[in-house]
Image (cartoon, rainbow, N blue to C red; front, side):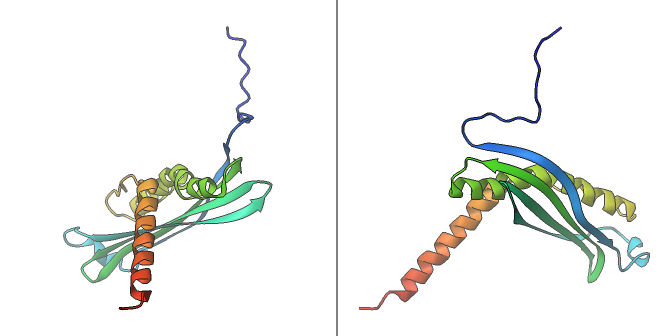
Length: 166
């Protein structure tokens, strides 16, 4: 028998610390405006997925992170379904520089929330009478890198266009 007593609520005392305080479904909706007629015919939808995050500083180093996920499936010109999920979590962040804190909020936190949002979408789509939908994993690190590269390119283009001609 082990004498190890683990305090699952504690974090290391030195260095940056991340604590997950709570994960919860903040909001969700499902619409199938063209049912039941949308169920006839071959199922070959065009699917559009949108992801975004927002944060809310709760004080005492606690931050709410909300992952917003919307999935729209169209069959031709008709909307088959629209699912919107706001999956949220409260995270405790201590000891991070402002830059590192921003990166954690844009990558680590959404990565923790995404599986829950993906499950909520799959559940609602199935309950709506549609075939299973399995959303692919998302690399929030790659999304952040792409957004930063795009921002850098826009900034560079703006600087070039503002340069006086000789």
